[in-house]
Amino acid sequence: MLTKFLKFYGEKFSKFLQEDGWLVLLLITLNLTPLIQKIFLLFTDEVTDIEQIKFPFLDQLITNYFGATVILLFCVLMYCCLSNFPRTKFFLQILILIGFSVSFVVDLFVIYSYKITLIMHFIEVLLATNLNEAKEFLKFYVFKPEIFFLLTAFILMIVAAVKKLRRIFQNMSEENLKRFSYYTLIILLPAAFGLCSIVGNAVYTSSYLGTILVRNIRNTYIATQIAGSEPEIWATMDSQNEKIISDDSKIPYVVFILGESATRNHMQIYGYNLETTPFAVERYKRGELFKFNDVIACANATSTAMKLLFNFTEKEVELENWYKTPNIFDIARRAGYHTGWISNQSPIGWYGNIDKIYSERCDEKYFADVDFDKVEEKDKLFSRNFDIVLLPAIEDFISHSQEKNFYCVHLYGSHVEYRERYPAEFAKFTAADENKISDESKKITAEYDNSILYTDFILNEIFKRFEDKNALIIYISDHGQEVYEGGKNNAGTTPEEDESRSMIEIPMLVWTSQKFREMYPEKISALKNAENNPYRTDLLIHTILDLMDIQTESFNPTKSIVNEKFDKFRIRIYNNKPYIRD
Image 1: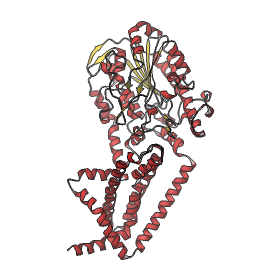
Image 2: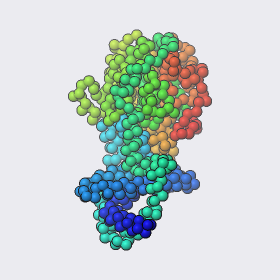
Image 3: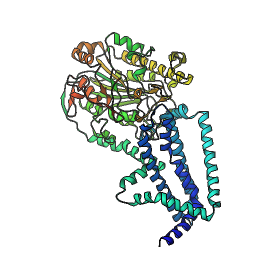
Image 4: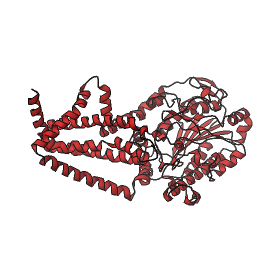
């Protein structure tokens, strides 16, 4: 019986290998990027001892083993179902090969840039971006001669491999094909049984994730679920009825400024060696500006951070629930505040644009990029304004302000590409001012420092427009930025798994007008006493409500950085580890 089975198996599988063996080998090879990533770590400063990655390396070998089995079984299934339709089968094979090849190239790019494979973080960022940001990303990272050379070489190599492997399998002797078939059976049979068993459910999950194309499709699906659909989000927000327990709010102007990609490690006011924040330093010396020295961002990406900044959702809670907790804009409106959203970021993204979602919760909105009540202006998505364009809009909002006003101003700050973030007259710093290793890193760091200098100017101009008013202005950055820090050889946004401290060590500044300081001396004292408190920005809504003298049923004084009941010992998690300031 066994002899008959082996004979039958050998004949059938030999024919399969002769026709489609080339595809199986190519797909299994293109599926090895997680192993490539582990090997890559050994040739960097990130890993100094092989013991550090021995278990993850072994675990990845097992995962790829099951992944190879999935690829083989899928190719066999395709062979059996489409053997009478050779053109259809070959077309489908080429589509699958292209999908694996694209995933392989993207994985290699991410491994080289961030030392990890493509994860859901990058897909979430991609879904939330717009055409202009995509163009700038490609310009900064991809549109380089060496990238095009390598990509062309890879395409030619894949084409050559397809031709060569098809020729090898077609010319292979029947005896060698059968021998190859038996080896395959011995090696992959345990995995095949594991995939088919109910007990092997965990193994199935491992193999599912171990297939590069399926992994990316799955992560994309989950990312779209996390982003949520705008109608569903708005309907959920409309149904919320957060109870206001007490409302003593009287501040005429409360302004929240959300910066972009600013790390405090490049700010003069936080001890940076270059004069990147001269206006902030001067206002701090005059006692009108307060700087919080130990604040970290709740996320490494704008879209993720914004899901946590404006509501009661915290980092450890599943992100798909972010819009199911009350937000500051709805609460402020119910407390009698006229709310406004003023943004230099785009309200149009490929999927789940958070700027647009929150702007719809406000009484009025302004987007420098596009007025999306006027369809014909959408071509402005291909341009980018400097943040100074927001000043006239702020003045306009002030001109028709009401008794109590809450504004959110969203800057474009230091988003890559840095040299596009400021006008020529702010190109103060050059490569000669920087102490990085290469000329390129010095140049890019200088451009980043110039963007911080320009943000300092913009903040000062915004403060000026409220100096004669009773006003409180809070500024933070959504996240920081990696700028060749700690021996890393890259600039830009990195995922949490990269553990870059510069990505989360952000500024938090609070500016107060003279009238505010005179009217609220107790708040000034609370601000001074809180400057060294440790904080993470997903708790920020508690601080904003506290400063506004509004308490709701979800408000927690232990989570407000300025409250005397603030919990200074709350653990702040970053990449599943407690963050401890150096």
